[in-house]
Image (cartoon, rainbow, N blue to C red; front, side, top):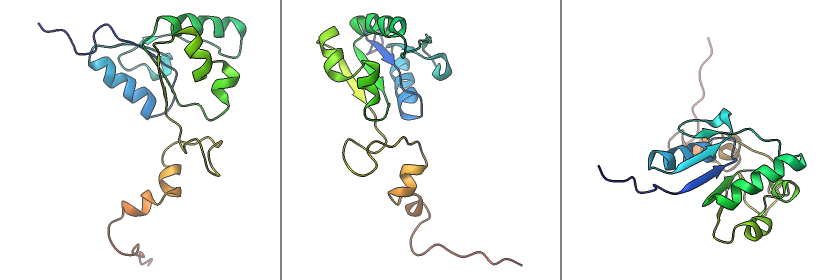
Length: 142
């Protein structure tokens, strides 16, 4: 039996909503070892750590040192506060791929806001786009 394409790759998934956990689960299906919070478990090894404590940060830094990929979707400023930002991770593990999935990107009026689907889709007009061509139809109420 052939090895999976991502055999030997370790992903530390700290993401909590949709794209992050789902993406790491897909990579686990391709053979990666995905370590994640048990609440986003699908196909991953579970670990629950409080990143706001020195002990929690130490545990995560040890995991970062051995990981190939770190993925998270914290809003801007949070990774720096939790000491899992790119600069800190680079010092711990120079070969680490650091994946950030921000809802609104790094710039703009919403950059520092938390967000999860469907809010960004509605803000960007995606919800209207799903309705099809033309103006939304009005329902008759009888």
